[in-house]
Length: 265
Image 1: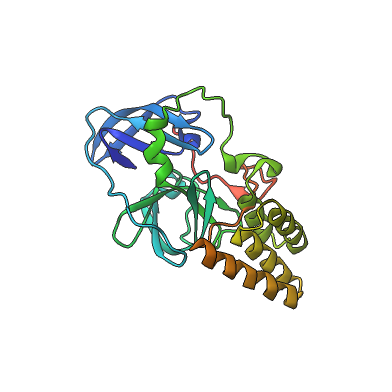
Image 2: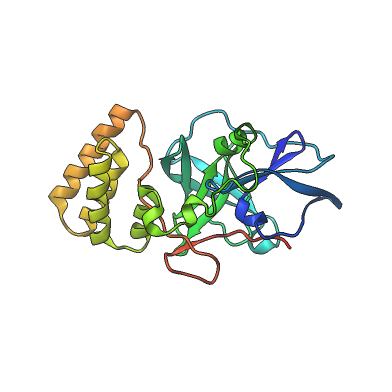
């Protein structure tokens, strides 16, 4: 995605093993070089001399239920746009990882997530293999901060947060993984631990309520859900579920999460 000033943003896992990178548009091509990278958040900026243009970036806050559009090149083939809605906003490292129902697949990594006004709100990055409402985009805020952070090659980070082992992932990813796999007992246990660590996080209570509802523990589910709503009112908005989601490279499925992008060699 073009950010302006001859800069583009994509996922680091897209360029990680590439021997070279090119931007191609309307029969023209530009050589692109990695200018800065944040491996932990899986975002890299590229610089392509002579390229012009930029995607308008949304300035307003996002809301659950908001209509969005995922745009990319699934399978590395024809450009595609799919519609959906924001399912959840997961607070992480000073921004919100966006969970959407807009489907996207391999090759779409580094594509854009847009609002109804065509403004860029996120970068398509990973999804659960079960599909459905488990597709994720990274907040554009992280991309805008990349150059200021001056995170370069050799920053010391080796794997993105979503691609790390289950135990090393944030709560919201672990919870999403368990929900996608319908592992309700494990989700209940995770929710209880999450609440111990972060009792004022409404999504921790939401995760617990979801688990109890599927375990037919109706009274406990209602109580957890009510508490989540009360905390949401206090915090002014729902922050994301704090669970870790297991992610895997193509062809390797230990956790149920897919990386839809690929490197161009």
